[in-house]
Length: 111
Length: 110
Image (cartoon, rainbow over all chains, first blue to last red; front, side, top):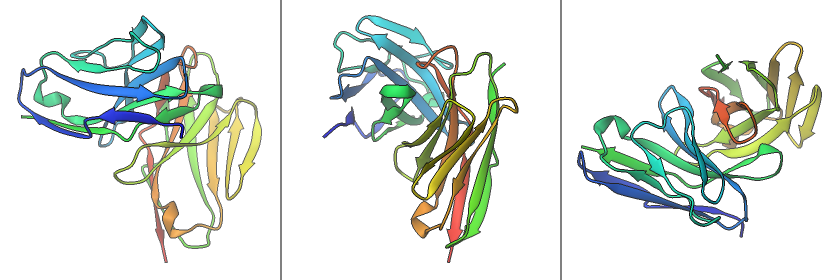
C-alpha cells in the first residue's frame, strides 16, 4: 500500500529538548515536504527536498532542520523547541502533477 | 506577494450543491489543486487544474480561469461525510513549493 508514515503521532516535550519527527514514504517519490498547520493559517511549508541531499527552505523554516540521506526518509529536527512550535505537523511526498500525499500528522506540544 | 483567498465557512444541506471559490495571486502559474481534510485527519488530494475549464471527478468538479486568477470546487449531491475543510493550493516557483489557502470549513446539515 502506497503511504507516508510519520512518528511519533503525538509528542509532549519541554522547551529546549531536541526532538526528531521521522517521515518515510514507499512511493519512490523524489519530492518531499514538511508542513505545519495552525488554526486559521492553513498549511505552511517548512522545508522541502527535491532529492537525496537536496533540501531548501519553505515559508517558515526558522527553528527547524531537515536531512535527506535516503530517498524514502525525510526527518524533521527541532534542535531547541519553543512553545511557538506547538503545532500539527505533516510530512508529504509529491507524485505526478504536483499531487501531495500527506502522512497522518504529528501533534506536538512544547511546554 | 503570493496568496490565496477562500471563504472561511460554508453551510449547506444534504443533497444540495455547494461551490467553494478560490482566488489567487502568484508570480508564475503551475496549476490549482484542491485538498480535503476531515477533522483529525490528513489532507487528501481531490483535484488539479492546469488549464482553463472544468474537471469532473464523480460528485466533485473543479474549475479554473487563469485570466481571472480564480477557481472553484463544486460539490454535488452533498452527503454528511462531505463535512470537512477544503483547501486550494498553488505551486510557487515550481511544483515543489506549494502554498495553501487558509481553508474553507464546509458543514453539511440533514
